Length: 570
Ligand SMILES: *[C@@H]1O[C@H](CO)[C@@H](O)[C@H](O)[C@H]1NC(C)=O
Ligand SMILES: *[C@@H]1O[C@H](CO)[C@@H](O)[C@H](O)[C@H]1NC(C)=O
Ligand SMILES: *[C@@H]1O[C@H](CO)[C@@H](O)[C@H](O)[C@H]1NC(C)=O
Ligand SMILES: *[C@@H]1O[C@H](CO)[C@@H](O)[C@H](O)[C@H]1NC(C)=O
Ligand SMILES: *[C@@H]1O[C@H](CO)[C@@H](O)[C@H](O)[C@H]1NC(C)=O
Ligand SMILES: *[C@@H]1O[C@H](CO)[C@@H](O)[C@H](O)[C@H]1NC(C)=O
Image (cartoon, rainbow, N blue to C red; front, top):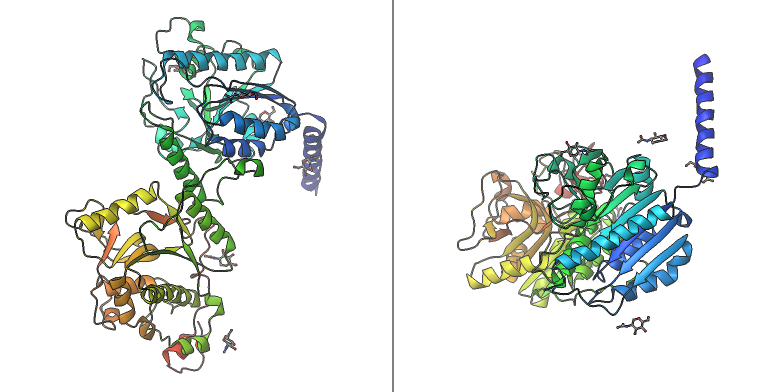
C-alpha cells in the first residue's frame, strides 16, 4: 500500500517534470551549417530528409554556402528554400552561380590546397556565426549525408556531450569517424573501428575523429577555442585540413569527440578519389539507395524535389524478359521492387503470384497437382503448405510462359530481394563470360541459400560462376529455354515438392535418394554466381520478416495424396 503510494507520487512528479520540459521550456537553438558543391544528385534526398527532421524549425537557423558548381546544385537549393525557408527561424544563404571551379583543380574531386583553404574559411565562418548569434548548438552537416532517423537532432542533444556525431553507414566500410590517428595526423586502422561500425559495441564512443555530421554544444566554455584553421593551432606541422585541425583543436581543449551508434541514424557517401568523376558518385548513390531499399521503403523524396532525380533508361539487361513474382495482397513489396527497378534501369514484368490462400483441394485436383507421397519438410516434418504450392505454381507458370513465347533466356525474381551493389554490371559480366567461354548452362542462381558444406567448384575458365550444389530458395535466377523445357518435361505437378527442393533434384545434387527416384531424368545444368548478386531483404526470425509460404495453411495431405485416413490432426 505504502509502496504504491510512493510509486504514485513518483509518477506524478515525473509527469510534472515532463510537462514542464515539453510545454514551457523552448528547445535549444541550433545553427545548421551546410556547404554545397556539386551535389545535385544527393541534394533532393538530403533536403527531403532534412526537412523531415523532428525538431522545431523555429529554433533552427540555416547557414548555407554554395559555389564552384558544375551542376545545378544552386537551382535545386533555391527551389527548396523558396518552399521551406519560412518555416525556419532564419536563413543565411550565400550562393555563387558564376564560379565553376577553384584554380588548378584537375577534376571535381581534386582537393588542392586552395580548395582546402576555401572550405576551412567557410567552416570557420559558420562556427563564428554560431558563436556570435549565441546559438546553443552548431550542427555541421555535409550535403551528402542522409539522416534517415528523423529524431537525430533530438537524440544527439540528449547525449549531453560537447561534441557528438551520429554514426553513418556507407555502401562500404567507410564511416564518419576514425578509431585511430597516426602521429602524422592521418587515418589509422585499429581494432576498435569494426565493432563500432557493426554495432557490436553500442553507445557513444570517444574516438580521435568525427566528421560530416557533427553537433557542437556552443554553451560549453571549452568550445571557445575550437577551430578549423590550423593557423590557430600551436606546434602543428600537419596537413592543411579542416577536419584534422578541428579534431586536434578539440583534443587540445580537452573535449572528447564521440561517435554514437546507439540508433540507426543514416548514411553517408564515400568521398570521391581525385581521379573519380561525378559518374562514380551517381553510381554510389544508386548502390546506397538500393541498400536502403533492402531495409525500408527507400529514401523519401518530397514533391518539389522529384523532378531533380534522374533515373537510368530501362531495359531487360539482355534477357528476353525479366519476371517479378509478387502476391497482389503484398502491394508494399511490389512498390518496393518497382522502386528498385527504377534505380537499376530494369524493365520487368510483374507476375501476380498464385496465392496459397486462394487454393484448396478441389482447385489443386483441377490443376492435377499431386504431392510427392513421402515428402515432409526436413525441418518441421510437415507436409507442403498452400503457400509453398502457390509459390511452385507461380514459377511453373513462368516456365510455361517462357516456352509459349519462344524466349531464349529470362530472369526470374521474387519480390523480397536486396540487390548487391553494381548488380547490372555483375550480371553483364557473368553473361559475357558464359558467351565467351561457351559455357553450357540451364539455370544460373543469382541468390540462394547454400546447403552443401563442401566447396563448390568453379566453372572452368570462369572467375564468378560455380557449379551449384544443394541449395535452397528461388530468390532469383536466370533460366534458358533448355532449362525451362527440362523443368517442365519432368512433370513436377504429378509429384510436387517445394520448388527449391525441385531444382536441386533436377540438377542431381539433392541428398534424398528416395525423392530423386521420382524424377529419373536429372540433367539440369545449374550454375551459381559467386559471390551471389541478390539476398533476401529479411532473414527468417529477423525483425520485419514475413513469409508468405511459412505462414499459410498446411495442406490436408491425405486428400491430395489420396490416402483416406479420415481426419488427420496437423
Ligand atoms: C508532452 O509529451 C508527452 C509525452 O511525449 C505527449 O504525450 C504530450 O502530447 C506532449 N505535450 C505537448 C504539448 O507537446
Ligand atoms: C546566376 O543567378 C542570377 C540571379 O539568380 C541569374 O540572373 C544569372 O543568370 C545566374 N547565372 C548563371 C551563370 O546561371
Ligand atoms: C542529460 O542531462 C539531462 C539534464 O541534466 C538529464 O536529465 C539526462 O539524463 C542526461 N542524459 C544523459 C544521457 O546523460
Ligand atoms: C587527446 O589525445 C590523446 C592522445 O591521443 C588522448 O590520450 C586523449 O585522451 C585525448 N583527449 C581527449 C579529451 O580526447
Ligand atoms: C475451392 O475454391 C473455389 C474457388 O475459390 C471455390 O469455388 C470452392 O468452393 C472451394 N472448394 C472448397 C472445397 O472449399
Ligand atoms: C504469421 O502471421 C502472423 C499473423 O498475421 C504474424 O504476426 C507473423 O509475424 C507471421 N509469421 C511469419 C513468420 O511470417
